[in-house]
Length: 206
Ligand SMILES: C[S@@+](CC[C@H](N)C(=O)[O-])C[C@H]1O[C@@H](n2cnc3c(N)ncnc32)[C@H](O)[C@@H]1O
Picture 1 (cartoon, protein in one colour):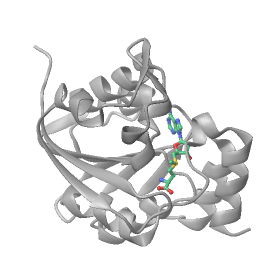
Picture 2: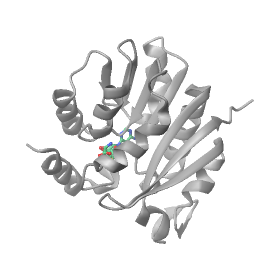
Picture 3: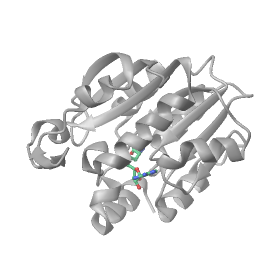
Picture 4: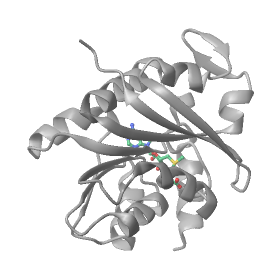
């Protein structure tokens, strides 16, 4: 089955989790991966593998000794991506991204250089998205980079439940609690168009 069919099927089955009907376009993937400084990275994490389009791009740039731990909740999507991207540097974990720290500990890994997140943050409960960002910041090295895309409707249409009321998802405001510097880029060539946030300077809890 083609990547598009697999994603469409997953989206119709559980849109709230999948957060999309389409795999990301090559342009969006490029914007997600470019800020990650993968040539120097030893340990990289991906959240929300889907059919593996971002995964594949990360592996293309990752050095031979690098490692990619990628989280995907949906077993069907994880199996599809595994078959597509079989690579000894990659491990796809069928657990929620909120389990990041325990999954790293179980593998005796620490000091993440880069995280690429395609999660539908705007559709998640407040607590889950805060748990994921807290864990990401704790896992990242001080010079680590975190990229996240949010579809345009996720930030512009006021139908999401955020902090107890119905309003738009204030992506930048949300990310500012976790990172000292956020650069936003706009990707029109994707269905739907999206903003890409490149976040640096993880703010560690004392
Ligand atoms: C918008 S899709 C992006 C897929 C792919 N990276 C792409 O760009 O085409 C988000 C993916 O995140 C997965 N997902 C949702 N919640 C998750 C969680 N808590 N942990 C890990 N993956 C999750 C969904 O199953 C879905 O495959």
